[in-house]
Length: 267
Figure 1 (cartoon, rainbow, N blue to C red):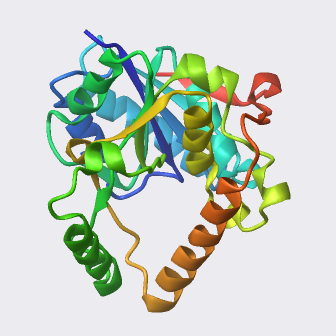
Figure 2: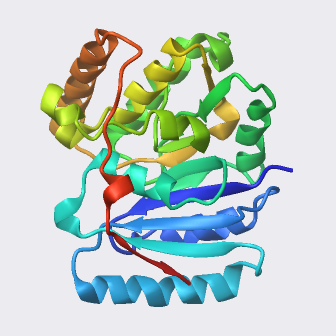
């Protein structure tokens, strides 16, 4: 039986956070630990989060699941740093990473993702995301095109993709190559749009590990974006991916988490 920590990155109490916790509590493989990385907007929001998690723990989880709140001041937030903090404070070798506005597609979601680690060469598992009911027309259209493009193909092994919207990784490999917090110094667009997860996947492949994409590990996820921000985001992310593919590998990454003094609370 796999023991897994689930890292949830959020800014304050997002509207789908309780439903996400409820779905994690109902998984066929129960998380041993939930790590909430909250880049809180103010001290009152942090107090509200503590109260919310204590109530959620009492209502949803047994004593077999622990909850740890990592308090990240909003001004210190970056995509890579918040994710690294979550993995750093996770107690288990297998670490699932998602965020406070994503939802698993089934009760077997964690089990389906963890099964792939029977292969010791698998460094990480990821899935794609499906539009929620409040998705914009453009997000729904993107999903429709995605389905048409992949109909009849074996995306489980053929395509490369890795995203911290929904992934599981081995912490032992993360220690060797944390998500690179220096990436914005090399690719300025990554400060806003990320890409450190795609970089991690490419690095694992360069080190002769495997990244597996499994549709049974998909999540529901959207931002409700209009055409202009939706188009611009995908334009920038395509540019970031092209730059990452040109990196000479293997390479080294940087994280400040091993020297950090971030507060955390075991609830």
